[in-house]
Length: 180
Image 1 (spheres, helix red, strand yellow):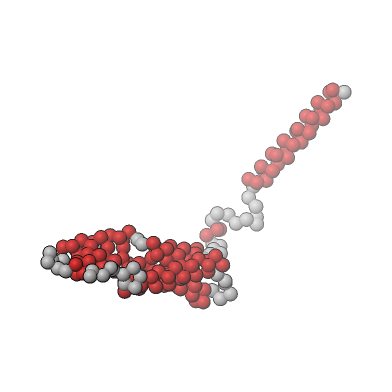
Image 2 (tube, rainbow, N blue to C red; image 1 turned 120 degrees about the vertical axis):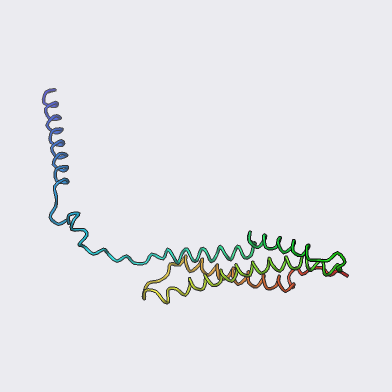
């Protein structure tokens, strides 16, 4: 009885090994319906549909530039510090207090506002172009909803940043103190 169990196990194991050998042999054999490597060059490549990666990247760039326009940038800070130094160097010792404040602080504040406005304007343009791009692309292909959302965020941040830059430049928002 123990011998029959051992014989059945060995027979089952041998059958399984034969099936494994058969599948590997059939995988190595060339198939008629699959083209060979030399024939792959003759087959025209599939035309891939646009994935929207560029539009998504543009939307993210628009939103990031909008945030930079609101928070300030390294370029704006350096330009402001430079303008502050120029104001200190060009202001005469006998100049009035109002003139010194304008030359040292006012011009630097306006320079910061200009750079913020530039970043806001770029964010606004990139966002609008991203939103308008599907109108000039493949007909019937819709833009991913997240791309629209992020592009609209970039447009909104750009408008807010541009508005605040104008207010800062004109002195309506946080204008210089009077020197009287």
